[in-house]
Length: 259
Image 1: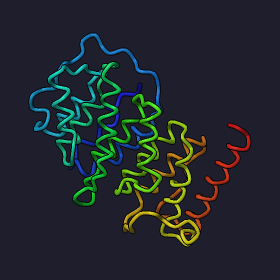
Image 2: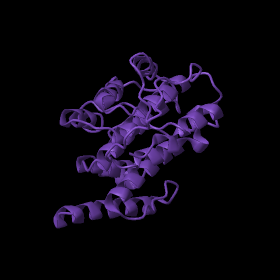
Image 3: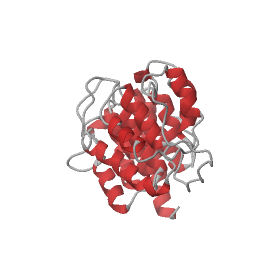
Image 4: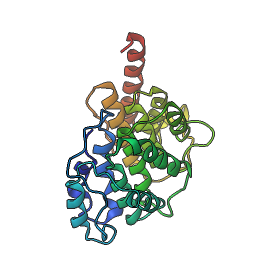
C-alpha cells in the first residue's frame, strides 16, 4: 500500500482549503494493492494536539506515519472528528486513512462511505477537500461488492453526490478499481462548457470553475488507459472535444480487444 503521507510534503504547509487538490492527485492515482505489514513500533494514538499543531508540524507527523494501529479510544474519536468540513475534519480523515489495522479496515471504509452518503454540499467553494480526500482514500482500502455499488450510486443514477468535485473523485476511485461504468460520466465532465455538451449534457448544476474536475477526470482516464494525459482544461474548445473523443475511442477499443 502506498502511504498517504506522500501526499503531504507541500500540502499542509499552506492554507488547508487550497492544499488538498495537489495531494489528492497522488492519493487517487495510487492503485489498490495489498496492505504492507504495520511497523513494529506502531502508534496507538496521535499526539493530543493533532488538531491544533501548526500545519507544517502536522505535515511532518503525517509523513512519518507507518500504518499506525489506533486504539479503541483514538479510533472512534478520529472517526467522529472526520465528519463535516474544515481543517480539523480533513486532518482526522488523513489520520484515519493511515490506519494499519487490517481487522478495522472494513469499518474505516464503511465510515468514509457513510460520510460521503450524507451527500452534504460544502458550505462554500473550496471547502469540499475533506470529502474528496475520503473518496480518494477508498482507492487504497478494501471494499465489498455492496460498498462498491453504494459508491457507484454517488456517481451515476438518480441521486449522485451534489458536489461535482466529490462526485468526480468517487468516479476516479471506481475507475482505478477497474469499474468502467463511470467512464462516460468522466468524459461528460471533459465536454462540459464546450459545444459538445449539447449532445452529452451535464446532469449537475452549472458551476463556473471546472478546471480541477476536468484535470482530475482526464488524469484518471489516461491512467486507466495507459496513455499520456494531454488534456488541458484551459485549452480551446476543439482541443477539449478532441481529447474527450480520444478517450471515448480508446475505451471502445479496450472493450473490443478485451484488454
